[in-house]
Length: 385
Ligand SMILES: Cc1cc2nc3c(=O)[nH]c(=O)nc-3n(C[C@H](O)[C@H](O)[C@H](O)COP(=O)(O)OP(=O)(O)OC[C@H]3O[C@@H](n4cnc5c(N)ncnc54)[C@H](O)[C@@H]3O)c2cc1C
Figure (tube, rainbow, N blue to C red):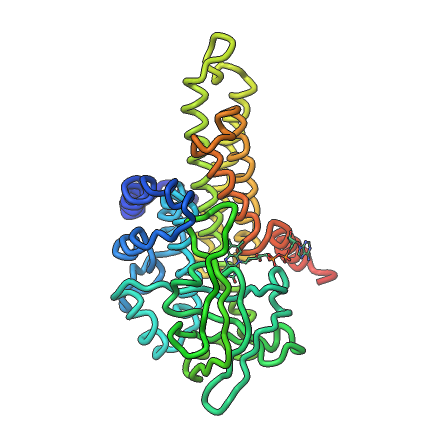
């Protein structure tokens, strides 16, 4: 039996997130986009509303929600501003592996304090020379008595300048590729941890993105989350869970662009009629609506599979690839519908187009998502993989 009706609890979550988005995020989104500064006040309110801790079980102070529940929240937050949403979301990316794979001691030490007071966390996988191919990472974590000695620089780290702790992937031996990768929970106050200046970006400018450097950082052995042979696998499992949350962010961005395009098309008059009367405009609007609906459904399915504990790598990659392409296409068409006005900074559609672009890049590029899908397909039918 398939049902598409949200439960009363999910409707309440959606309503709460929509109100937060409209009352807290939307009024400041343009200002933070312009300044490129970090909306700490919004983060604190979002943490207070439980949006930082959706997947953390209630026994540790979190919301105890499922992936689909969180996708419903995420669409609303991203509809207000994707840069602000991603700053909220990225803590879940760093926390999920602790929820899923952490020891009881790690959950007590990291999840509980994270829930009880305003905190942020970052996920450190990428490096300057390593993005799509993280198995070739250079950062090293060498066992040293009951510690690990961590060295290297991670690049593009969302919330890098604000995290209380980092989930860091590093290798015990670069020659071992994925087999040598481990993950460590690294508090930002440890000696040798530093971050660079915020990177000036095209879009999602309200999010804080920095390099983070680890120089002879002594990380206690009890902060090891995943050992050799496990670190890479667990990083990928975490991405299967979080990709639907990015995909649904793309849905939120596209939805806002469509809503603005509809409003504009109904009021802008050319050739004596609102441009919405011209079939070419109607076709663009219709394509927006059908693609957004399809992206949402694909995303919900990937999230639902995750909640069932089922393998969802292919569906999560499909959702992420499809929804991010939809966001790019819909925001570009929204600018088109606004005509010259869409190309100015006077209207929000240009921001949406800039914000959409990076969704095709981070959490696995559009090309890597297609590789994941193809590998799974070929694996399922047997043969060369
Ligand atoms: C704003 C922002 C925030 C980010 N936040 C984080 C974060 O919090 N934590 C983190 O760890 N990382 C983060 N990233 C990094 C992000 O995940 C990487 O940028 C992404 O994985 C791509 O890596 P790259 O930039 O090195 O591109 P590359 O891997 O160098 O790719 C360049 C191009 O080559 C293509 N390509 C590469 N390999 C193949 C292949 N085998 N087949 C076909 N095409 C290929 C890619 O698709 C892309 O088009 C962030 C990036 C940005 C821009």
